[in-house]
Amino acid sequence: MSEEPPFDRTPPAATGRAQTLAPGVRRLLAPNPGPFTFTGTCSYIVGHGRVAVIDPGPADEGHLAALREALAGESVEAILVTHTHRDHSSLAPALQRLTGAPTYGQGPHRPARPLALGEVNALDAGADHDFKPDRLLTDGEAVQGTGWGLAAVATPGHCANHLAFALEGEALLFSGDHVMAWSTSIVAPPDGAMGDYMASLQKLVGRPETLYLPGHGNPVREPQRFLRGLIQHRRMREAAILKALADGPAEIPAIVARVYAGLDPALIGAAALNTFAHLEDLVARDLAATDGAPTLAGRYSLVGGASARVRSSSRKPATRRALAPKS
Image (cartoon, rainbow, N blue to C red; front, side, top):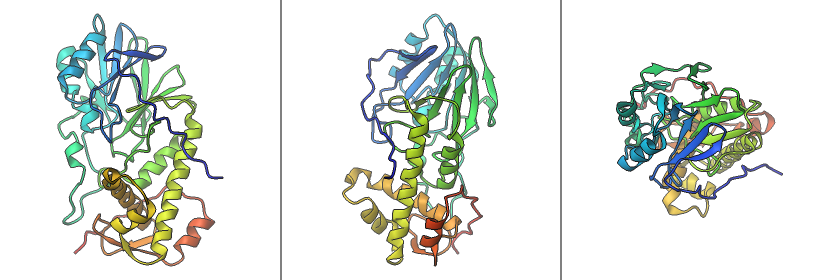
C-alpha cells in the first residue's frame, strides 16, 4: 500500500499572543489566512532575553505590534528569513528598524531559472524583491546568539533561496514552506523547481530532527514518516501525469482535469502550477517532450519508453539541463 503524508489540518490556536511550542521556542501567528497560508504565517521567537526571530511575516502593523508585545523586555540579536515570499519576509525591515538586529537569509529573491521567451511569472506578485539580507547564509552555516544557535539547511524547490534552520542542541528544524503538516508545498516555475524540491526532501531524510516547525500550520511531529509520504505523493503525481500523456499529447488544463479530478475550482490554478513543475522536471529528465522550453501554455507528449523507465528505476534527483527559449 502506498504511503500518504499524514496531514494535520487542525487549525492552530490563534490567540494573538506568542505560544511556547518547545523549550526556548515561541510561535506567533500572523493575521493573513488564505489558500496558500492556511491560518497565517508562523513567526518564531528563539531563546529568552536575547533572541532570534525567524520569518517576521507579512507587512502588517497589527502583527508588528503583536511581535513588539511578545518581545517586550528582550533584545533581538538576529532576524532570519526562510525565503523571500512576502508573507514571510516583508515585515523584516520594520522589525529591523524597531530592534536594530541584522537580517539573515540565503540571498535576494531570484528564480530557479530564467524566464523563457514570452513567459510570465504567475506568482511574481507574492515575491519580495525588496528584501536583501545583511548577511548571506550558505548551506550548513551557523548563526550564533546568546544561548541559541541556528544552522542553515539549504532546501530549494518551493523557492530558489529557501532555507530551513536547525536549532542547535535540540532535535528541531524550522522547515519554512518546504515541509508543512497541513499541505504539500506549491512548486511554481520559474521561482520553484520540482527537481530541486525532490532533492531537498531527500536531503532531509535521515536527519536527526524529530520535530519540524513549519511556516504555516501545526508542527510536523513524525517528520521522517511525513517525508516518506511527501516523496511518495509526488512520485504518484508524476506517475499519473505520465499515464495521462501515454494517451497522447496534451496541454496542462487537460492534464489537470484528469489528474486532479473533482478538485475545488479555487485550487485549479495551484494544481496547474504544480503540474507545470512536474512537466518541466520530466522534460529535463527526457521522460516528456514539448516544443521549445516548457511553459504553462505548452503542449506535452511522452518520450518513447518513459513509462517503463520510470517503473524500472528509482527516482533520482534531477540534474536540469539548460532549456533553450522557444524561437
